[in-house]
Image (tube, rainbow, N blue to C red; front, side, top):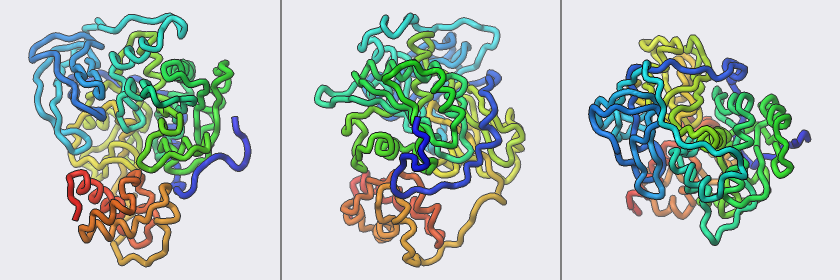
Length: 442
C-alpha cells in the first residue's frame, strides 16, 4: 500500500467537502421488502432486455424475467418472489421512459431460482466466468451500467495485463462502496481474481482514496494474493472516473474518448467484483445492491441493501424523509447526480445513492458574464476549455465545439462547481454533445 505523502493522482479536479461522516461507519442493513417492485427492462448501456414473463405469471426470487438478446445487453431477474401485475412504460430516474415489469411481491414465498454454484477459482473456466457474468445480469455498479460480461471479454487484438478495481467513491455523501469493501472484502478480492482470470491479466490493483483507510486496511488484512495490491490514491474529485484512476495507478494515459482497454487495463467497481463473486460461488444474480441514503433532511441516513425496482418514495419514507419538505432529491451524489422531479421511480442497478438536500443548503449563484479567470480550464481533469465550449454551444457552433473535443467531457461538473460567475457550464456541454449525437453540425 502506498503511504507516501505524495499520493498518486491527476492534474485538475477539486476536493469538495466529503460529507460522509453520517453513514461511513454504518453497516449495510437489509431493506424491508416492498409490496411492489418496478423492474425496468433497460437499466444498462446497450439494448433493452426482452420480457420472458407475462401478466399474472408467478415468479421466484432470482428467476430470469428479462433476457438480454444482444451481446451488449443485460439479463433482468426477479428481486423477490411474487406475481407479475403488468408490463408497462414507466418513468426512470434518468427522466427517460422504459418498459417495466411490475411485480407484486409475496413475502411468504421464500423459494429462490438461483444458478448452480462453483466451488473455487480453479473449478471455473474463463468461458464459464464470462457466461456466468452474463447469466447473472451483472453491469457496472459504479454508475455507468456497462454490461460486465462485455468488459471482461476483450477483443483478440487487445492484451490486458492489469485489472483495476475502483474503490474511490469520490462523490460526497456516498459510502456504500466503502462499506462493501469493509464488510465484504473477501468477495471483493474473489471477484477481482475472477476478472483477472477472465481477462488474462497478471496484475490486480484496488485503488482507494486515502480518506478510506479503514477499507484499505481491511483488504490488506484479507488479501493473500501476491498478484493483487491495495493502493491509496489522492482524495480528489473525480478520482473515481476510470481514465483518471488508470493514470493515477499505472501512469498510462487514456485518450478522452478512449477506453482503459486501449492501455491494457480493465477497470471495474469494487461492488461489481463482489456481486460477481456472489454469482459464481453462490449462484445469486444481480437483484439487489448496496445504496447510501443520506442528506440533511434524512432522519435515518444509512447504507441499505435494497431490491432493484424499489421506488424512491418507499426508500425515502423508510429513511425518515418528510416528502412534503421543499428538498432536492438526487439519484447519485451532489456532483453528478440526477435531480428527481418525481419519486415514484425505481431504484436501478446503477443507483449507488439517493441524496436529499434542503433548499437552504443549495448554493444558488446568479449567472453573470464570464470574467475569464481560467478556473474551469485549470481544474478540468480532461484539460478542456469549458467556457469556450459553452459559448460555442450557446451560439449553435457545434462543429467547432467538436473540433475542441467536447466529447472528451466526463460530465463531472467540476467546471460548474468552480465557476465564480455561476455559469452552468456542464449544462451547455451536455447540450452540445447531445446535439452532435443527433447529427447537428452547424
